[in-house]
Length: 340
Ligand code: AMP
Ligand code: MG
Image (cartoon, rainbow, N blue to C red; front, top):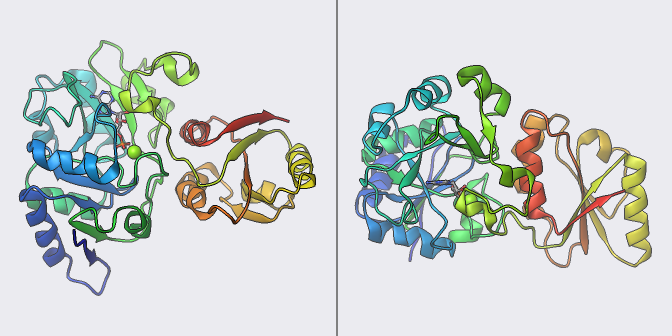
């Protein structure tokens, strides 16, 4: 399949590209587009065959549900049986924005969007290009992250191109995304909402808006079966094994030195402050605060290729603010946790 790539920047007339991309979506084809979290791979959520195209292109397991993207609250309300007041409050407070709300589906979306579940995850993205595309095509668009299943999510169009070129009908390239980690997924089908996946909107922010919020126990205890189906799969994996190493820079350096003695070449991922105090074969600096680290994390996970280094050593981060989501992704990406 030929993948058409549209470049959107100050020199390109956006509307023509968006019209072409929207046409492809309306015709049952797959198109990748930027959101404020990561790039998504979209298809008409009401068309089962179109949605199958997403699973095929990504190699995604069929029991992992997709998020339906819409431009407005009105369009969102057409996909669900009810809009409880807590969900309405979350929508009014945080959307458009990096939050996915799980609600009872009314069956408008194809059954493969929800992986056969009675609930559906819905989201209103806050990116001008995503908003424009969703408004122009005027259909709900099912869109998981636009990467090969198991790999880090794409935060640039080049990441999407590397994974999916030739497998999808189009790619709207509008540069790097903002948040860099996927949306917070929150289940609003019970009286007290439950966070199923930490993300750009933090627990503290949610509680400010709606009071009590619970966290899916599976997020704390990996032995529990996760409630959000996709959470059980291997995710975000770099090409090279990665260790998450807790402790001071001195402790991290001791782990690096020990492994280097074993003739291993070591790559490091760390905050600017920690990176400045470490020595290794290659060091990637993620940024100096948690928001910067979130934004650069997936790109860093894609940098190390087989043959470059034998092991990635990554620092651990405090689970405050977006640190909760950063650690959730790193724990899934890592092959081991070392408490030095
Ligand atoms: P992705 O867009 O690739 O980040 O994947 C979407 C994720 O959203 C899935 O892996 C689930 O964790 C979550 N999700 C989507 N729909 C539902 C739903 N109906 N119930 C629970 N979790 C969902
Ligand atoms: Mg994904």
